[in-house]
Amino acid sequence: MQPSRSRLCFGSLLLAFLAVVWFGLAPRLMAQTPNPNEAKSSTAGKAPPVSFIKDIAPIFKESCFGCHGPKSPKGKLDMTKFATLRKGGTKDDPIVEGKPDDSYLIDVLIATDRQRMPPLETGDPLPKEKIELIKRWIAEGAKLDADVKPEDDLVRELRKRYVPPAPPVVYPYPVTVTALAFTPDNKKLVVSGHHELNVYEVASGRLEKRISTRSRRAMAMTFLADGKLVVAGGRPGEEGDVRVYNLDAPGKKVGDLTFLDGVNDKNVLLAHLGDSDDEILGLAVSADGKKVAAGGCDRIVQIWDISAGVDKAKSIASIENHADWVFGVAFSPDGKLLYTASRDKTAKVWDLNAKESLITFPDHQNTVYDVLPAQAGKAGLSVGEDNQLRLWNVTGDKAGKSLRNAGHGRPVFRLAAVPGKPIVVTCSADATLKSWDAEKLTPGKTMGGFSDHVYAVAISPDGTLVAGGAFNGEVRIFQLTDGSLVKNFNASPGYSDKK
Ligand code: HEC
Image 1: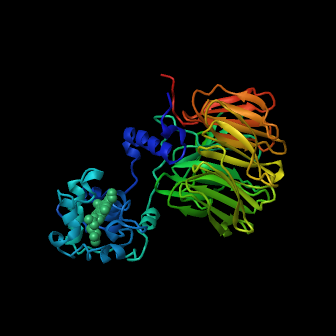
Image 2 (image 1 turned 90 degrees about the vertical axis):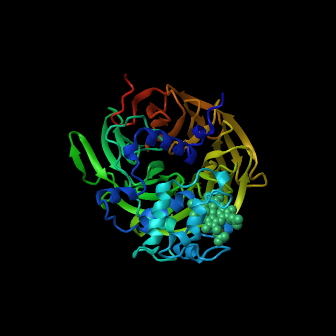
Image 3 (image 1 turned 45 degrees about the vertical axis):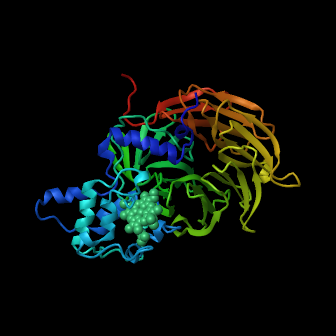
C-alpha cells in the first residue's frame, strides 16, 4: 500500500534510488570516479605509478570513511586526511612504505577473521583488484600526489577533481522533475534535468535551451531581479552546491536548440556561492534581493550576502538549528527572519539579527517539506509528510501554536506563493496541485491530470500561471484563475513513452 520511503523523500533517498535505476541501465553515465584500470590497460606491462588521490582515496572514501571519518573515528583512525591515516589510530602508522606485506593496512584488508576491514558483519571484503592496487601503491612507496597536502581534507580534494558527465542527449528513461522556475518574462519554464537545466517555451511546450550543470539535479531554483538564476542541488551523499547562471549567455545552436555549458563557460556559470558535503534541498532569496539562504542534507542553513553582486557573494551565517535534513527555507518579507522546514518533523523560525531560534512548530509530527511566511511575517505556512498544509503563529503569546490546517489526501511536498496575492499553491503525492487562500486555508482550484507524485511547483512572476513537475518527468502548466490546462509535456529530452 505505502509507496516506498525512498519515493516519498525527494531528497537523497529518492535520488540515490534514481541513481541506481539510471546507472544500472545506462552504465556509460557512470563516469564519476576515475577508473584506475583504464590507464593501466593502455600501457600493459609499464603501468604508470598509482596515484593516491586518483586511485586510492576513492576506494577509502567508498569503503572506509563512513567509520574512519574525523568525528569519533573507529579505532581512533581518521582516514580522511593523508596525515591522520599515516599517524595511525590506537596502533601505529598502518603503512610500511615499499612493503605491502609488512603493512597492517593490507593485513586488515585480506584478513578472514574479525580483524577484517570493512568489518565482517558489514559486508563483503574489498574486491581483489582494489586490494592489489593498494598493495602496488604501498610497494611504490605509498606516495602522496604533489598537488595534495598531507593535512588536506580528502573528501574536499576528491570533490574538486570530480568531472560531471555530459547530460544524456536522448533520455532513455524519464527524469524526475525536482525543481521548476518561470523566467522573469513569464514566457518560459526552466525545468531540472539530469546534470542539466532545460528551458521550455510555455505557449508551445517546445524545448529551446539545455544548460549542462555540475549538479546532478537541481533541487530548488529562483530568479534574481536582474534575471540571473540561482540553483541549489548537488549529488546525494557526495556534495551540495549553490550556483548562479546566466541563461541568456550565447551558446551553441543545433537546429532550433541552444546548448549552454554551465560547467565550464564563465559567461554561463557566473558564480559558485558555496558548497557542502551533501545535497542542498531548499533555497530562498530575500525580498530585497540582498540575501540568499540554502539548506540541505547536512542540516545546515548557509546565508550569503549578494548585495555587491553574486560574484562578490559573502557568506554571512551558517545556522545549525535542525536535527535532520533541511528541506525548505524562506525569508520573512522584511528579511529579518528565516523560516525552515526539516525532516526532524519541525518547522522553525530563526532571528537573523539576534542569531537565535525564535519558534519551533512541531504539529506536523512528521517530515516538514516546505515553509513560507504568511500574514506579512506574523505567521508561518508549512507542508509535510502528514498530508497537511498548516498555518501557525509566529508572534504574540501563541507563537508556535497552530491557527488552522487543511490537507491533500497524500504527503505535500512544496509550497509556492502567488506574488501580491494571499494565495498559495501546493503540490502533492496525490498527483495534484491545489491553490489555497493563505489566510483561511479554504481550497481554491485543484489542478490534476498528473499520473504520479508532483514534486515541484512554480508560479509565474505575473501570478497568472502555475506549473507542476512530477516523478515521471511530466510537466503541466495551468492558468491559475480557472485551473485550466495551458500546456503539458514530458521534460526528459528525447524520451518517448509512446511505444
Ligand atoms: C563499519 C565500520 C568500519 C568500516 C566501514 C571500516 N572500519 Fe576499520 N575499524 C572499525 C572498527 C570498529 C575498528 C576498531 C577495531 C578494534 O579496535 O578492534 C577499526 C579499526 C581499523 C584499523 C586499525 C586502527 C588502529 O590503529 O587501531 C584499520 C587500519 C582499519 N580499521 C582500516 C580500515 C579500512 C582500510 C577500511 C576500508 C577498507 C575500514 N577500516 C573500514 C570499523 C570500520
